[in-house]
Amino acid sequence: MRGTGESLPTALARITNSDPTVRAAATDNALREVTHQNTIYEATVPVALYAAAILNHPAIVAGDFDHDVETRPHRPTLVRLLEWLSDTSYDADDECVAIRERHFGKGFLDEDREMRAFRDLRPAIFSAVHPLLGHGNAVVRDAALIAAIPLVEHPVLTPQRAELVDHARRLLTTSIDRHNRDRVLDAMKAWGYDASALENADDIAARERYARLKAEHDSWWAANGTGDYSEDPPF
Image (cartoon, rainbow, N blue to C red; front, side, top):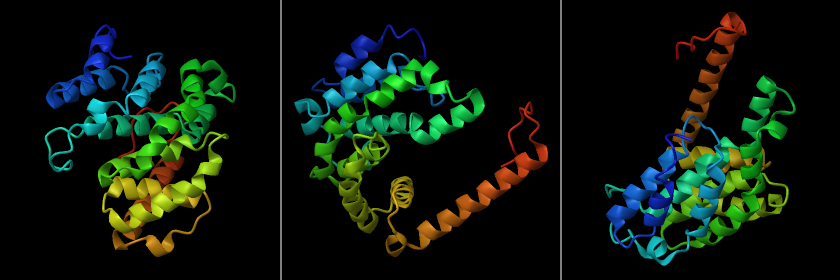
């Protein structure tokens, strides 16, 4: 956890303040304490539980939506919390576990109690996120979908994928957000759904660019990776 964590209780309490400026500052302060280098900290689990629990708090639900959420100086607290839950869930997803197991061995997850605890929490977080898939604001709906995608890797939640695919198709017909489109397209492909009819020219260009960068990255490591080389590849 970054810092001492002493400010967390105060910051968390202020996230539900009636003043949107206070909410925004408190949210940034609280989440900053438990966000660093894609790491799941001991405090991440209780903060995630708290964030999920207040998604339907009156101050969170009603606030910050009087103006265009894309252009306000501070994104609505509800969207900010969903984005943090999404990012944190991706930091603990199956791909991250597989990468760490390649580096640290198959018993990695047995040793990392914090990541294991967060992964066990996914059904509870999903229960809080799920109602927001039908929110009246499109930005909130999209943020809820992107947060839900990594959560349904949990074995209990895999049946929920079919519902998320319906929401994913809706997002692909309405959103131009590159990050969200990439997340949705990757998920549909991983789940065995054909989304090619929903791809646009930008999606195809992005996919080709990512593939090219990955090939360059793999080629560089094949030529230069020695196991103890610390310099990042030049791209």
